[in-house]
Image (cartoon, rainbow, N blue to C red; front, side):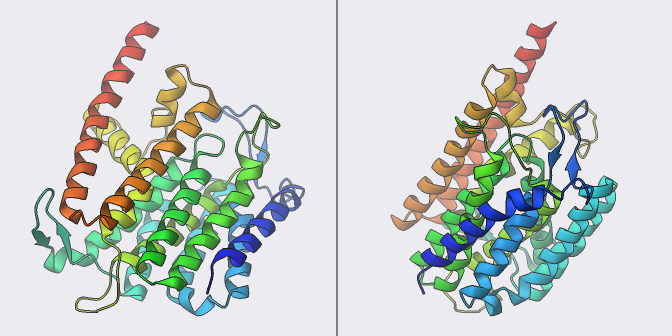
Length: 350
């Protein structure tokens, strides 16, 4: 099936649902109030995730793809409920982490997709994980889900990364003949683009009208993990066409690298890596003088560049180990640049 019309349907539904749900956000206590860390000026409805997931689900059902998502629906719904309660009442971070681990374990167990091995950087070899394969897959899912949630710090940033990832994974799935997964990725991208009309800053709108919320960030992060696992990992010995894991993960490289780099430097400074602050990549760009729209579009461009070049290199026949090696080297370079840039800004502030 062609994924175009379901993706367009998802776009239209999300576009219409965002302002409709925003009218009832205050009554449902789904409003993000500004504080010392959240500097968005005025209360904003956090109903974007509800709109995106509703639009996604309706478009999937209309496209006859409900059976394809059966194994991932439970974990996505679990994190949606956890995020929805958190949006209304602020759950403890540790409780949310525990629920993410449970959701990830559920997803891995129900999908049967396990990270049995990983290519060695810059070589043709692989390292096998054996008994560690299952817990490492759970850790990967938790990391990706957290990365999507934590990068949701500027208007349009998380949504743009999700849309790019959905579109990139749809293209990769189509290239290997997994047309059902290609349609799911396209529908995800379409639904998020409908939300971005209200969430990103445009020349005609200075501020976001709705936020994604934890319900959206956590559930969509889990949905994205389901798509990555389904596309790149299978049961050991299963012969379905797959996309290399490096290629499947590359579209979420920007939030993943941000998470790892920020956690590394927090630990190096003796701080809690789970404690929220204004020390992420997007905050660094703002401190360097970029406006919010320019910072967001720069990170969108980087995400699209990484996804596009990795996809093109894969289709050109470059080995997965080399792709992984290049991504790791770029991440290491960013780790150093990130630290040096923050130190310069802090010295200048003194």
